[in-house]
Length: 496
Image 1 (cartoon, rainbow, N blue to C red):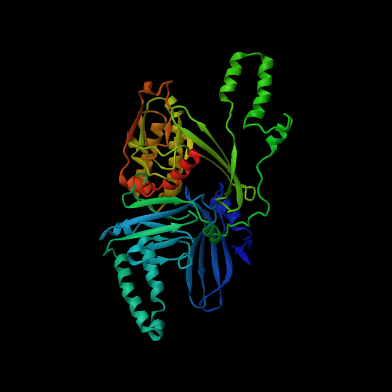
Image 2: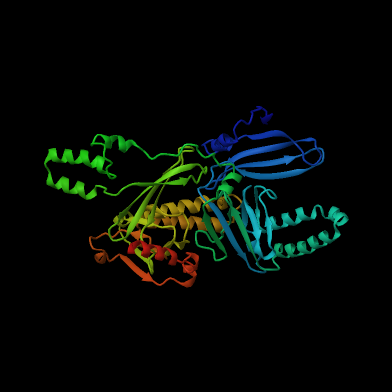
């Protein structure tokens, strides 16, 4: 039975209660109490639940257990919000003797794994459930848990206990900053975080990588759906309409074009007709079997290719899951991999520049020198937006991830830094001063639309091509790419 103070309110749905914490009366969110079993003495203790919303971060459930019989205490944090679209992996390089790096806050969800490669040490998700701590706190907690059963180990297996003692000495050295090491936080749910004190600027010691979850990771998170027995068929709405045209399958866009051409013919307008034919889509929409990234159920991805003027051939992809309702649309570069990377620089001087179309690929890095804002490649994924929309989305992501640092316990200089960043952001979006947008894409798959008919006449837009470094080719997987088998098969087919 769960109670809330004197009202005795029952906890029915933790997620609904957590979402209600984000309402205007979130300050009145009740503290729930649940009688639960103590795992140490077997008696009943009390678990207190606080469902709240950390501003600009996540909905969370704070839990604290206390047993009055054996004085056992335990606290935990769990995420009540949604599963993030992709998993995340934070890598923090900790130099020797820099204790301030060890004091960085770490939000670890109950599905995250902590790794220290130098010691070949790994803390699995079940060993330390959801916690809000620091780098040092996470390491010292692991030391404490390993030491808990050392007395029993010395009686049963003295040799193993001695080896663990030697390992604990090394682990304590890392926790005290006496040696340099790497701290990796890998979370398939995407709900973990390591503090960046330099935000919104980049941190030379911290790197972040996003990745697609595997089916095994989906299953471990409890989001694996049973595959549907019947194959998902492509939409037949267009086929029904095409049946009226003599039962022949028409290319994508032809059904709407048929009715449009008939209306244009009745209007007898050459100008409207020319405009219509220019924007009609002759491309064929193809489908391929896919897997939903939210629930891992089988679904269908529809795609077709088209050509963007002044840019290149691109592939438009749209995925819809009938099981969980997940939807996603992407724009991927088509054709071969360019021999050179591309750096596009736009000098924003008027409000028309804010409305320019922008294509940002997965491999693009974004830089705004006036804001001291740097976005590493892969962050936020690919998107089609405008100049203003790109900056707003980046800043919203920064506030969502780093916003929990703006609480009451935050140092005053950090608050002033964020306030200064927000003020400068407001100035550049209101064009109180000119600013520069730089998109650096090693795969040359990003694009900023020109304001003139000829891209050479746009003096505010500069495009530079450069040779990729060996490190960039290695990161993109180009150094070890072998296409000899495909080339041989293609040449054989062409010869026939």
